[in-house]
Length: 247
Ligand code: PEP
Image 1 (tube, rainbow, N blue to C red):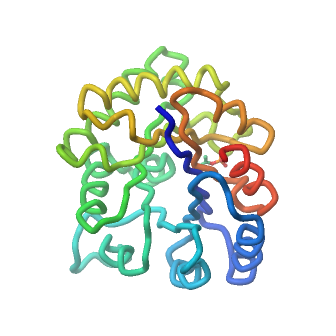
Image 2: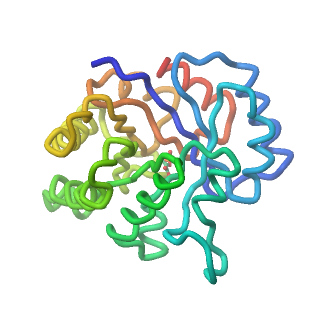
């Protein structure tokens, strides 16, 4: 099945109003892309990004959200607030959140569910550490992570986007080879097929040191439907080149 590709820039905790404006102008000038493109800035910039990208074909999203609807949760951001700002996506369970903030599979799945309830598409990240890969546990780890999201989302599972991000490849310059990535994507697709008849229409993104020079080979794989891009999403020329490779 031909799935339209999706490239999402995860800006992490980078940017400034001036730098963001330059980056977005660079992206806007390079349209149209033959794929869906989104950027995920830090929370304080979402309103700016929303007004710059409103009425364009570029989309935006957040890097995390709360499981709660509202209330006494200092520092958290409710999915309804993201929806109000026009966020199409929210990344949940990024490995930096899992590792640095101790987020569990169940918390990540609950965030995904809370996002969907507000009409925001969760991008659910899964991925193994280097030690887990070396111990032959990759399949078990990613299946456990995805399974929690599948069961929690239940009949809405087909609404999520999945991102496979091997932790040893994030920000390290080490990319999974196209074959290594495809092997895991195929497993994830199989797992989705067992859960929903819509699995073939779902997007499974690859993330981990995607750059202009390795993007095309990754995107040529049967089950790689685009990318979640970190470092290379901060430079317009690089991000544009990756989007073009997907288009
Ligand atoms: C990420 O953090 O989602 C990511 C893929 O980062 P990088 O592209 O920098 O490896």
